[in-house]
Image (tube, rainbow, N blue to C red; front, side):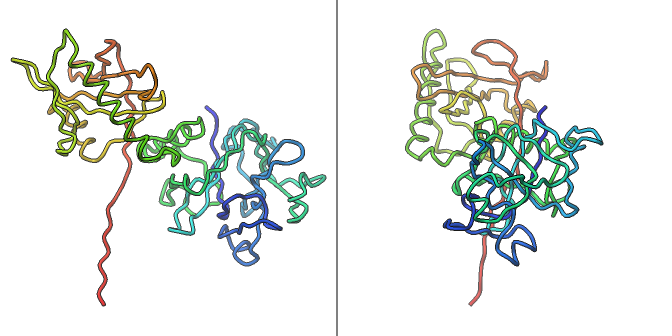
Length: 336
């Protein structure tokens, strides 16, 4: 598996330099705080050689690349996904701002033989710690910087770089989210691409409901379908047929082809009840490619006897990965 390295820097919008650029470096450590400049300011400049060069402060000036798979005598390791994180000036939380895929990470900082771009020269940058093809560097726009890197125990803490310990279940779930993000899909659950507007989301949801309704109403199933979408019962549709138990259908629509969905707390509770055998008539219906000419329907059901999920449309065993996340509602009351 491709190793992941999380590197902490100051916060910028573009990371394409400061001199003659309308951008600023916020945070990132004592030196940037004092001088308003740091080595990371050109982390997303496409250089003359087709590469991009990354910098992060690491205290003792060494990166423990042995934890990424390098030998003790190696000066660098290739094939690392470097994830850049920074503290948001809005709420102070560390958030993913971008990444380099397939990067080379050095144990010690490297000096430029000749400066790789005019912007590096203008900003007088002299060293770097990571290099990757510019085509593999992705910088998230401000509106897409949602994914939070915790600073608590087993997480990044106050360290400038972090090697995630996937033996910790919560960290392993986060690791999967990040890998999904780098692979080009939105991370699981409540991190969505900002480009998908409300109107399209509503179209996707409506199409998914229509696909599931058509499937259950068609012969020979011939169920009668009732919408309970606004009733907050933990599912969207109820399918009835004479003399049989009513099926509870939770419907999720996706515009893409990967079946990764988010569940509200109430929906997740019903899913857990289904696994426990309390809600045997529950079905999870996922429609991918909802707005395409050939949407794909998957209906999964858990069997307490075999402890397996099964796709009831195809009859094959299904694999479900469930990654719970934390959330909270906070209210503030002030007195005059």
